Image (cartoon, rainbow, N blue to C red; front, top):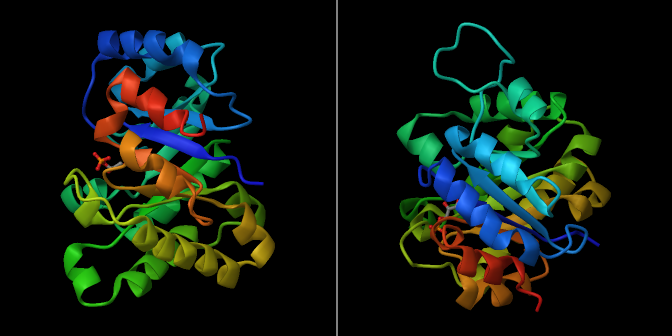
Amino acid sequence: MRTPIIAGNWKMNMNPEQTAEFVKAVKDKLPKATEVESVIAAPAVDLPALLENAKGSELKVAAENCYFEDEGAFTGETSPKVLKEMGVDYVIIGHSERRDYFHETDEDINKKAHAIFNNGMTPIVCCGESLETREAGKAEEWVEAQVKAALKDLTAEQVSNLVIAYEPIWAIGTGKTATSDQAEEICAVVRKTVADLYDQGVADKVRIQYGGSVKPANVKELMAKPNIDGGLVGGASLVPESYLELVNFND
Ligand code: 13P
């Protein structure tokens, strides 16, 4: 019932030429977006090249961040209004790298979620615990609190369309994937949190991704879990061959 969504998060990698090469290599080999949605989230400087080359293909385009105001004196920020005008579909918000290195707060992330919906795009809201929090036995309550804060005052209709990415920080870029059972356990907590805040109907519609060292070798097992509807993939999304293996996990 939920369309799987596999999103590459390029982080601060790739330039416009590399972006064009990448899209040319993958665009004719992607699954139908009605069966599996293939998304690439690229740095703002690469979005024009990504959008131009992805035109007419099944590839959807995401920004890796944006600001919560549409315009004004906010030096260095990216306008959600302009992202929409350019043709961007999704915006990642609340990635742990942005929370940790750039001090983004739950309140910022919630404001960004509203701004993205108000501009007709869909947020991919990230959540996830540190190793310390997990070892203290507090992963579930941590993620639940992050999800509640990010969704504050969003409507049921908005949340039905939302994507939430569960990314345990200890599994990002470490080669250490959460086991599919560990990933499923917290993705189920995310869905239950949405059910408690809204209702089961909304929770059944929200799409939940797992992120953290997802690669062709483990994508199938993760995607087989009932509460995992997709992946948010860093390193393995930078190479066309492995990206294609990820989005075509059903083949
Ligand atoms: P890796 O797939 O490189 O572990 O990165 C995960 C991630 O942070 C995606 O947003």
